[in-house]
Structures are given as structure tokens and as C-alpha cells.
Image 1 (cartoon, rainbow, N blue to C red):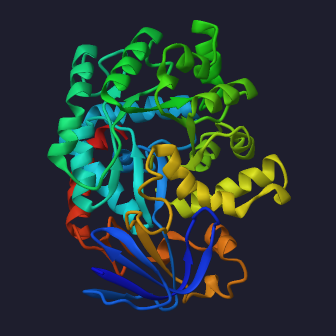
Image 2 (image 1 turned 90 degrees about the vertical axis):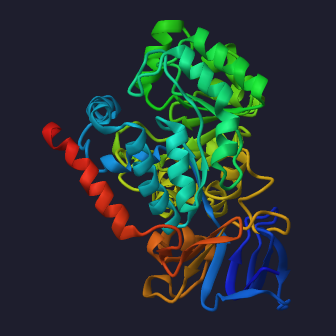
Image 3 (image 1 turned 90 degrees about the horizontal axis):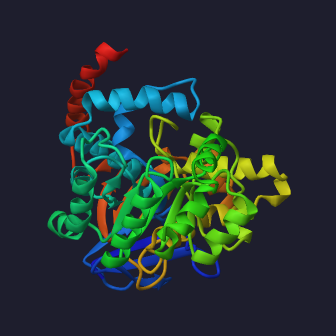
Length: 432
């Protein structure tokens, strides 16, 4: 083994049986999990996990990492008010270098809090991908599509050109494996004609698609007024759903929408924190799952939910189920799976990450249980959903590479990053 993690008090596997193992060792070879058991096979390096819980790295299935620079910028507003305020700020500072800087910050925050994979939709994706890979994150990004030039100033033809170049860009940047994605923003910022073109390119490239769908009732009403359809029906009729697709939010999906999505194999990135903060609504987590839809959890952006903490997202997802239905309807295993293996299915990585199983890539986190708020342990899943927090994460591995050691990045200097960020955001002062 290249690395042997020993003496773990618990290992939450998120495997097919949702096993929780005790007093276990995990061996890593060539970036993959090669051993799970109670023995201690020879290894070049070892990590003593005594008193710790090892879990799959958490997967954030819908976010905008670069917007970490706008944390706290748009408060006390709904989605429309949020977009108006944030788009003005983005127009002021979000050039390629700043998108890279913001994503570097967001990627570091994600990793330090136990998130190893993010589905990141943002401007200048080549720049954002460089920033995230520098920090060690498994960073899913892709070309963005708007009908209009947008904040990145690209014409439609340029967006199409960048889509065709995207695989080469990914190969040049490197980093942990990610699927190829195209990311039209939504059915209200991309016309059916243009969505049809994106779908055709995705088929040609063997790519997947991520877009916002039914985040608010106002969005549904707008799309219905324009096209006499729901956003999901627009996705179906334009061919978007003919390739693997993940919806961002999906708060206001009807029963019919769910049936369409399930029949096409679409998934949902559920963002309870952002949805609650912006007053967008309460997504039907259990109903989505019962319909046969894979549901992952997400944070949305730092300017709509203010952090990238997937532990708080798990907690809020459980509370939303209790509020919509009842506490008895909260299935803690399903919440943990929505942050791990179900999210991996949703984003197209379930064959590689999302569970602790031999052959999977070693995206792992260590949680220190030596804490008053984590004592005693009666129910490990309850502990993860309702008690543990990002501050309890001590160490993080992505594809076997230790990117966080003892709560510190092994890749970049936090003090230097904070200095660079604070210098850049001074450009926003005239907009305050």
C-alpha cells in the first residue's frame, strides 16, 4: 500500500448495504482504495485514525465557487433581488483572473470542510478549473451558455467554440478526473433553439448537462408564459434530457416533471440552505427519491447561502423533510447518501467516488470524534447529520493525495490567499 489508514473508530461506507465499520483499516494504492479490513498490511506511509471517523469525501452537487468573493453581498432579498445586486458586483470585478481567485478561495473552503467534489457552474470555467485544481479539489466545471453576451462578454458563437474546445482544456489543466459537462444557465436565459443546439453538442461530445431548473415559482410562471411549458418540459422537448442531466435546485418540480425527469434519468442538486435563505421554497426531497430520481445535496453560492458547509446542508435537508412531512419521514441514511454516493450518481461519478469500497478512488475525510458535541455516539448517521460540523474535519484525501493535513491545506498558503482576496475585493467599494 502507498498509505494505510489505521485504527479508525468508524468508517461510514455509503456502500450498497450502508455499512458502518468499526476499528477498521483502509489501504490506498495508486490513488484507489485497495484494502478494507482489520489487518494492517505493509504500507509506505500510515495515518493513525484512532478516535476518528472516516467517511467518503462529501460531494457538493450544485455551487458557484467563484462567488465566494461576494459572501454577504446580497442580504434580505429574494432570488430576483439577489441576481440584480450580485450581477452588478460581478460585472465590476469578475474577469478571468478574479474568477480563478474566487474559485481558489471557494475550493479551499470546500476541502477544509470535507467536500472533495463540487459541481461548479461559473463564468470563465477554464480559469475556475485552474484555481480549483491548484488547491486539490475534484472540480466539475463546464462552458456556460447564455443567449446574451453576459458578464463574460461572449457571443453565442464563441460559447459554441469553447464547448468544442473544452475536452482539450481539461486535458491541459489536469487534476482529478471529472466528467465532461456543458452548463446552459437555465430555460429562462437560454432559448429553446439554443438549448437544442447545446443538447446536440453534448451528444456529439459525450458530455453531460447541468442547468438551473424550477428554482422558484416565478421562474416556472415566466417559462410558462413564454412557452406554455414547465422548465422540465422545455428540457425534454429540446433534447437536453436525452443526455445525462442534473437540475440545480428543482424546488418546484410537479409530479409530471418528476415523472419526466425520472424517465430520462435526470438528477437533482438539492440546495436547502439557499432555497430557505432566498425564500424560494421547500424542495420535495422524499418525493423526488420515490419518483426514482437521484438527489444530491448542494450549497449553491456563498452569496446566496454564505458558506460551502455540506454538514449544515445535510442538517437543513433533514429539517426540510421534517417540516414538509414529519420527523418520522426523515431517513438519516438517505441524507448521508445524498451527500455521498447518491450525489456521485447525480453528477456521473458513482463508479469512481462517493463510497468506501475497494476499487474506488480514495476521496476520503477524517472527522475527529474527540469533542464534547460528538460524545457519546449512539447513532453514527445522526451524528453526521445533526451534530458534526466542518470544523471537525482534520484530514482530506482526493484520489489518495492528502490535500488537507491537520486542518491545513497542503497545497496553498491561506494567509497569502486571504491577502490576495482582500486586495481584489476593494474594487467593490464604489458599489457599497
